[in-house]
Length: 160
Image (tube, rainbow, N blue to C red; front, side, top):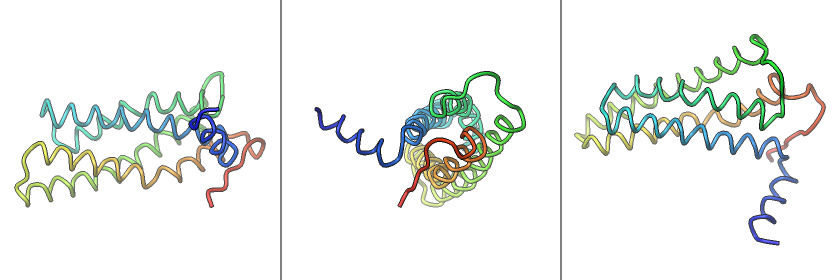
């Protein structure tokens, strides 16, 4: 048995398949968000950091919703507007708000320090990543308990 399979088995027993899949879906979302943000703000200079961040978050939210709903929690059929879609987008925009605040701060800091555009762009990406990371764990519990979970049936996760 390879080291990676053994490690995966330990993590799966500790946290459960759903938590692992949520983490993997989050990795995809982070990669999409960071790539779009860096492309729009860092390379193309198409928009401000905040506008680029809003667009990047909206773009990444689409695959994130479907990966979490279908793959992580195994839900099939039509999505429920008020129980799944609206709360998911509300949480995405809570994360976006936190990200906008940190991105705005990062851009102000970069300007005050007279950083290059590349340094500014990297700082903006790190600020966005930090903000979304802060709310990541809370989103898991909301998704599991209120949105995609099976109302008490299935896996429970204890992070301590």
